[in-house]
Length: 448
Ligand code: ADP
Ligand code: MG
Image (cartoon, rainbow, N blue to C red; front, side):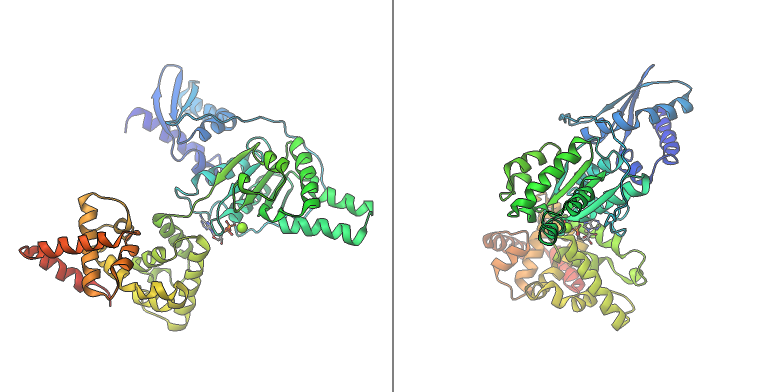
């Protein structure tokens, strides 16, 4: 370890004792001290996002700890590889005393149990930033992504973080609740101003408004109008607004233009479907702690991750079924066969039938110490493409599947690619005894 690393490690150790682990992981885990000059420290951070946030929020704390360790004060400079600019408005926080309101938060969803990967890192980072500095940066925060990818989870995580760490008032509502609150007033009370007042207080006397699935506001014109005013009132007094939707602001066709424009004032972040690696990570994370967790073989994780591709809710459903089936069957270990049986209705018939392909892929991937995802990927390096030829060859030789179907299961490849792989291996086998032995070995490892 060089001097910079030693200093930075010392710093991180001290820092850990001063801030929450969520903050630590989000802002400091991937930082590095690049250079130490007489009066300056050059610190590398992962994103522009970190740079501005650390400057605004953590500068003094970093400075204080470094000064304590070294006896000197340094100017801190943060650098990132990608220097895109972001404009932020620093705003003064106004403290008002509010009536008690039920925040509607679900304590189950926290930052601590939100598993991070490439597809959601930006959204998670933005969410932590907003939770730490509500109303000061990125207002509104607009989170969008398809169903089941963690939008609601992140919103509650923000709310829970804020209520745990401050006195601020948080309100979480779905846009349906917002509409029904609003309609409720109009229907029951006509122009009863007390009640209208109550509605306004409920929504406007808060510090943080989380409004989930905003796409459902579309069409409800009067409610949109009310939301627009609520939005402006909160925004003008630097209150944080966090919105989620299954589509981007630009695609919210049914919303009034002026609302859409407002949404663009802040920061819009996407959540994408998790890749294979993240799906495995989420599965493992969700399985830890359960009594049968130690019985679950790695191949089961890969099997579920391979077959439940699009969203996290689907992964959770698979775990629930696996557990329910284990509770009945009391297995000694939860291996691929057991999982296939437990999940046969859940994962769907077509996929069940192609288990043969999955099994072959698994055996080949294991033999070459690569992953099933590699076999399905676009990677063309020999260490991947050669095992892919072999797996395709075996599928063609040992299953009833059509070349089209096999191609589909290998990352949507064309059937001619399948034929090419088959021919290639077939030709090689003519005078390559070593390859014959390898194929035999792989075939023996295919789980039946
Ligand atoms: P959305 O609101 O985008 O439809 P949710 O937030 O309701 O999705 O997520 C669906 C389920 O998946 C929830 O139970 C949530 O806890 C879980 N989930 C989603 N993303 C993650 C993640 N990255 N880590 C852990 N759990 C997740
Ligand atoms: Mg949701």
